[in-house]
Image (cartoon, rainbow, N blue to C red; front, side):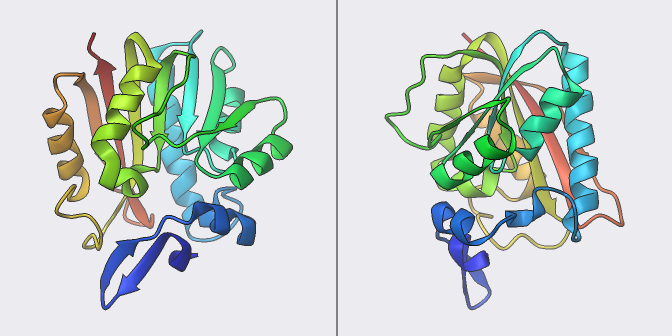
Length: 218
């Protein structure tokens, strides 16, 4: 799986980003189903933190889960928060096809959040970048602007992200850990303001989990 997304070059990582091949060759990349493996407990923890944050923000809203992959988090969002109208988007057509097959009651579509010609007419109350940070890091500013364009006035962008407990091997010059993400968020204060942020570090989980809620500025 690593070779599809990152290439190891003598201890450092180079981003490859072949998500289409990944989803064609791996039935459950990163153990998204949370049915097995060391990531399962982490997913339960990170998803519950995300859901609690959304409960606090309130219901009756439209939500887009960007980087939805196979749709497991999107489906749990819809089941846990029934007042939310949930949709999912991913760069991989294969992932979207599989998500649509697994969860036909939800709407999924294929879109690349990093492109300069990104256009969607639908506007959302909440947009989630779900465990996507390292894969859009090179185009993070463009992705942020695209998220801004997706949101209604006063809408919220939520970044839900895993962070390594040990030293990060990729992108430290652009975003070094959770503090690096917060520093970046301050740099886009012309379009977003930080409304809330938190980092959860649980000793027996494989990753720390970071949450940042940004409010769209008009």
